[in-house]
Image (tube, rainbow, N blue to C red; front, side, top):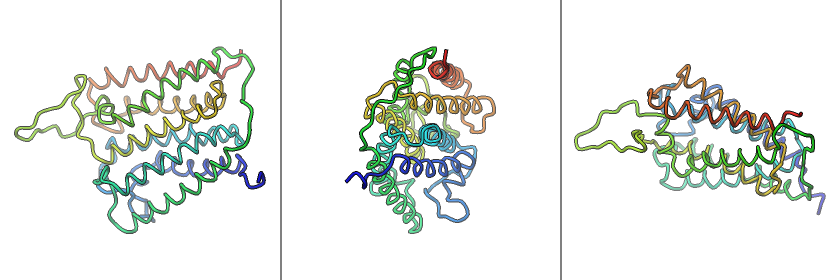
Length: 300
């Protein structure tokens, strides 16, 4: 029986390759990735034609999550069973979310209509089942807690607890309240009101007229964050050093992405109010989190 159990190395390499390919496409050319490029059919309907739409920012955000949550940790510790715990949850949640996307009206305006596009989703769902099964099998090995006993400026326990609280807050907001969260960072490009229409507000911000595409990608981000954190619970090792390292990569790169967004404005629809009340405070909080995580990986 033991010979049938998959090695964590095998599962982690498979997952890292898949995440690496997807994250590269989303990071470099998010619009082309969602359109299927030159050789595939579009993955979604009603994609924005302008490349500076905020939807493509969420795609890049997701790319950095895959890099910091899977690819980089695999390079650091390719045989880690902890990564198998995390990616098992990611695959299961992603499969359920994809089924909701394809077989319900939750995201009906984003769901593709052509047969070739639907076939791509069916194939990816099948691939998710295969990768998920391999990863779950790689998670059943008995293993001791991985602990880095070397002294650091801040203990990994403290840093990981702070990161779990910080990221889970955003993960919950992205998943359950995507409209309210994104409305505190963006505004609608066209704000003209039709007769009789009123402006809904949340904490002084105008609520966005969210598209199904934006809601889909926001929930992809949120569920991925929560799934990676749930892997820590399954591992039951709050001092897991790989979670600290992966989190440092994720938060650092996302902070740079947000800084680039504020200074260069590659994606528009941000007002001065959004910058002062949301983007800058978020940069400060993220910077503090980077400092905490870095202090937990730097040896005294």
